[in-house]
Length: 228
Image (cartoon, rainbow, N blue to C red; front, side, top):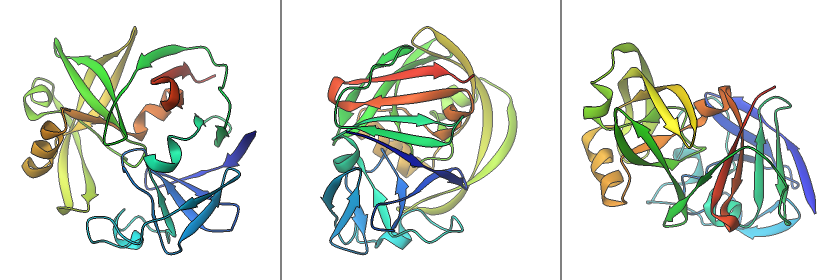
């Protein structure tokens, strides 16, 4: 079955309403799904939810984004489907079967169920989490400092709270595609956590300004398709 679900962007986050009326944040960067109820009805399935993650309830996990969240939907649910993020029509397409799509295919690995892609920046290859729960993309400080600062951004992570980061515009190669991606740098404790998981950065939702993105975890790939 194929399920097409409208979404809205709220403070850089993808927000949908589930079949049972709960408000969900779509977060490939979370290994588990957390909610106020025991289950969520979504894309034709009944999916179990955890009551908390890292000791935090669902309304504390994304930080102050300006909308109530009932469910943070993580990789344990999302990895059961092919998922297309279509920012042109502003819909998500979920499919039990394989979606037939053409574009730039990027192989992905996984750490704790969270997808990792490989990018090239500043002459270096780096692994980056593909995180639809991230409104800001991140690289390591050494890479960021090779490019001029173009602004600042406010962000939030549950383990460190709110923080401000300098933003650098960085030419980045994803497969055969070159894009200028605005990236920040993480607080040191978060950067160390990334490194421990085998990654150097985070690819966040800013990629949707340029591409439709198909997340195909069962085939271990992401497909980038230029927006029309």
